[in-house]
Length: 569
Image 1 (spheres, rainbow, N blue to C red):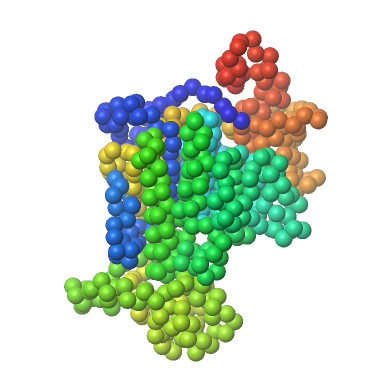
Image 2: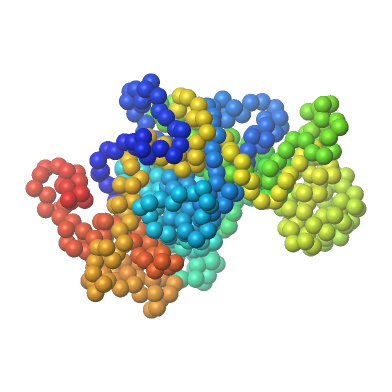
């Protein structure tokens, strides 16, 4: 549902924890050229070394090279090194949280000594995202990822859940959030097990989407045919293929640039503007695998998508593009112990030569190796698919790494990088250092900001206050109704909890109020926080249940004015 709210500016107090400032000339620029559209673009898990390597490999400057930039702090509430769910929550909601939490406030027992939790939020309480705020402003919204769309980064904008691993529940949140465009992988979490999916609640969410007027597409060709309206594109049962693997393993899948172009084409038809988040999900996975070719090819694919967005912004004149990693992964370095005494004579050819023959990712190579993990077959496949003359010692080292519990792709990437390239890695995990932010449409360097400032900036540009969105979307049930007026039923059907309030039924994780034979769609969803045993509902639900939603009896000739009055009285 569209929502008319008062226009709010983010005050200096809202940004007191950061050095972000907006110069007078930029404020005047914003007044003359109102910002309608905000595009977030996230190359998950990388830093400047990946940008450098990608530039060398491409042989020309990247789109990101031409953009204004700054740095972003990435720590989360309970660790110096962030997890992806907490990072996404930070730049989606403007607040930090605990590892694995999505769109909810942090727990308090293990916070960093330097972290101050939000004073107006209890642990596990949902926190509104910029996507939800954009929806309230009447803007179209979209999410794109090359992973399952239920993965941490996209989920942080649309879900309010205590564990990022709850893909089925996350998908339900997304379906009932009324997002206009969703492109990526993860179809299996829309379908029940009886229909080849992963859902254990028996629900077919593809049918729900179709019933709600969405176009549902599954191939690149079907994506190209979309011209207008709301759309979900699920191009893989689980994750989409890495860019370098797509031609070999999944030629029917679109690229991230193609998904971005189509999303912008559809969303830009909304005259109120749009918010879009695009994630190059697998740059991060390449870092985890210590796979340099995978990392920079997916980064270049992401940069191509950034060019699509910036080209639109240049033509449109009312769009801001903000690109940033959520954290670094793997800590790729150009130079390792093998170059300790030779780094001043390293040529481009020497740096790039080991990568030129790599035709698939380490994961793709593991697929080609198949079930035969003999040293001889490992060596043969590395030669065929990576163009590297690995030795039997290399193969045995890969097997030893696997025996320690590492994925085959991690073992391959680690050993080949160490023994046959000039690239170094410090970890298969995340890193804590600041990451870059690149912008188009913000006419000054940002300096060093916190990741939470990204959400605050987006909210300011779209002219809403996240605290106001919070107040509209998340009212704790016991604060609106007495104990004898409501009950949460988690026993009758544990997979589908239901909230009963007076004569109304509100399914958890959905946007529905059911009263007899009447069903009303709300502007937000019902959120259950099992860790605190609390339930949160939109303010609109209170009005509907109490019979205060009297827009139909409007005494004025302007329905929007009646809607504004009904929602804010």
